[in-house]
Image (tube, rainbow, N blue to C red; front, side):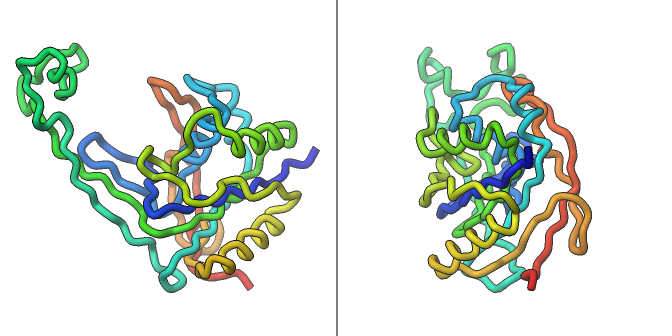
Length: 235
């Protein structure tokens, strides 16, 4: 049976799609990552833990992203940098407050550089992304149901990034049909085409992302994929 395309509309004042981040610096891609999109679906399903079998089934399909924003076509979405203190203002003599101060994996104070940590977190501002996600036909109806009535809260990369539009926007036989629906939604919202991201190697800027999830849970694992970023609208 042909694998249909599901249209996910990801819109919010702030979004964050980490791909290669460290603790003190949490970067964001300028568009949704495949791991982030599949993580969102897992939240909707209430699928916690490693989920190796589910990810193996969902991650093989095509994923295209069309970005819409207030800027001119081709412009990258503006990034917001937020400074956050982790473990600041707590009394280490209080047994409850000390739980909130960063420690080693053994639960001890670090020998060097312990105490509060300043982190830099990046967010994409005022963008909408149409994600055209190809899914197995026998999973599409189930996922659509849970996107309407999610088990866990849905957010766009981080828990502070709350969506401002219904995420599920329909299931279509072809990617072109899903993109046409997205273009109509963007026009109704007075949003302009910014760029698109295609899986594989096409004409445009090539990128290698380590964002195909093999395993979630405590010990996450990913594999690479090649994508192409195009900054012009197809005729």
